[in-house]
Image 1 (cartoon, rainbow, N blue to C red):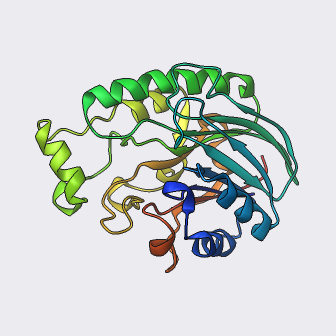
Image 2: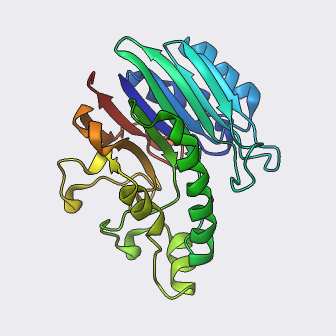
Length: 255
């Protein structure tokens, strides 16, 4: 299975063709998409790619919709956005029947920005996400999406980051909070991109213009981390025109 996590930026309006081109070039079987708030655009993507779709809409955030595309049948999909007040956007828990068996997918887009106050909101969201994933304990599953969060070992040079991000961080003491990913790791999940890579060789996803941060992830339970054949920031030429995020692509071996 090849799974892609892709924040398509503001619904993908006006960028359907490059977005679909990136997904095709990735040969993705399953795609979690953040910022699918333009329902028409999302439907057109699914049609162009000939994939099943599920869109989860946020009842409180008109730009908080997320979606799932799959070449395989989506057996079950639930939007937890309306069900859990800790979530600031929609969130998907789905089961997909692949050629190698059923996989559970939890797809999220957590609260943005770099202050400790923002991180506390994300930590509450993460509690909801971990609760969503409890159904999949003991079976093969992934937690994927735009976490707007930073790995505790991530090497970040703020001088190379987007100036708006750099200014926000410096306005709050120059510290970047790293508690969300740390908590996921402490709860038995492995960062798929970090498996077999030293931090100096980690690839960044945000922004495509100033790619100094890594906020997009695919997490897998440590117990089955050997199923990750590879996980990279996917950077074909058109990706810069498709979104402000580079997607993350993981190749999963049968467990």
